[in-house]
Image (cartoon, rainbow, N blue to C red; front, side, top):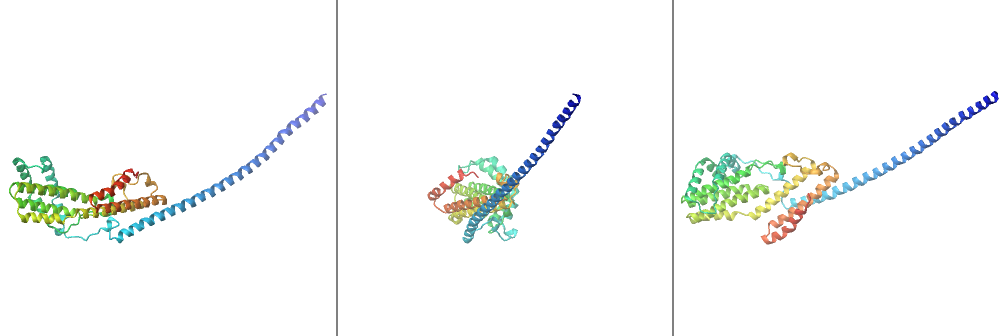
Length: 365
């Protein structure tokens, strides 16, 4: 019995020993088969993924290239039309030759700049309304202020007498260019109007009109700058001189010669033509700004705010370039319409501008 039991135990042990061994071999074979299947699936996945990515890249580059080509060709055609009309494409195209200081109105204006600012600060405290007749004490205070700045008025007369004008402005900066001298034109208009008013109340009507005439000539210089802002400053300074001349004619006697001289200066003004030229220069500034945005040369800090916002992240890509070209094309179209409208009479101009203004108000960029 012991012997049989021992043999039985031995056989059982062999059986128990054999089963796990077969299981291990079967498991290894299954594992190998599973690894082969997984590897084949991975290869197919990578292959198909690569094909899909390649197709997407081809589509992206094809679409992006087509968009850039179409939009840039449209803008190039618009630029060619502008050049064919004899107009400037960029602000940097507005080049002028250097002028000797003694012939440059800008030079004399800047000589008077510090006094102009001081005069204007004092003038603001007087708060006069030239639409109404001044009292004797008001004229006395204004005369006292005017008499403090004889050198300033001498420089302004020299500036008004100059036929040439070249400001110290870097037009390559485009929308970021600095134009601090524009403030001095406004100050000069108020200073010259103040002197004219004093002369008118002192009985020197002809001198007062001559002063108004000089103010108009001086302000006309800023109107020649290729900038819409400069044009608006010109209109503001012009308005001050005209208001002063009107006041003078109401309170003082003037000679026919003095009035004829003023009329001649007023007749030479062409604000409608000046508005068209200002819009053309604004168009040139916009086109130059778009070019700077595409090339990444526009400094956001110089403009005071991000020029592109979220678009700055993709402005250097083909899609970003296409977007900017497309936006520039529409910008040029709108400016061309405004330039055309500026040459029209008021009623027709307002009718033309209505849809433009609506589109701009609804624009999201």
